[in-house]
Length: 108
Length: 113
Image 1 (cartoon, each protein chain N blue to C red):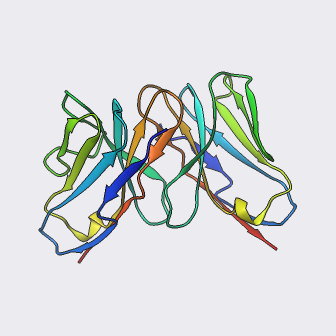
Image 2: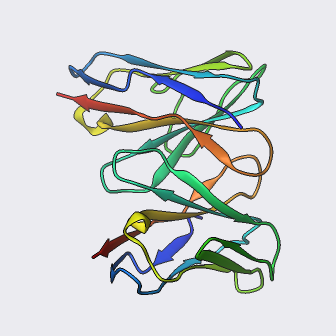
């Protein structure tokens, strides 16, 4: 029941865009997105609580397709600070189940 | 929000021994979680520790191996018992103040020789 993310890894130049997908074989109740830099704890980016919802956070936004049990994270005009591993998460009850992760590297 | 202090930050242990990880929160929280993150992998939930009740363990994790205490709303411990090299991981405590975001401790990097 762990959400599956794609791609597993992305390499970008500064200013390029990326899309990270999160798919679940089970229902997605609320979708969380976190970013984790090497050696640090995950940091919350955003949460989508219902199907059809879209949210933005600076140049990072996300969408949630409840029927397809999918969510996507959009990173536009990437910056060096965007490098890290991105995790989606599904929270069917109190606990949060993290996705498989997508490693993003942004180079100058 | 919540600020979490997790100790120790890292340790190197001998196989067969036990290590207790402490998690102190600066405010009272109902929901506390323990995760394990193996190198290069995602975070795997070990158990949910709510005050006043027994911890709820996820599939593949048992109380004898990972006993948890939650004596009050600001503190919890996770013990990794009878350690083997396969237990080498980062262990993170996390709290939720509602159904929004989770806050994480800085993690405990455990190496078992």
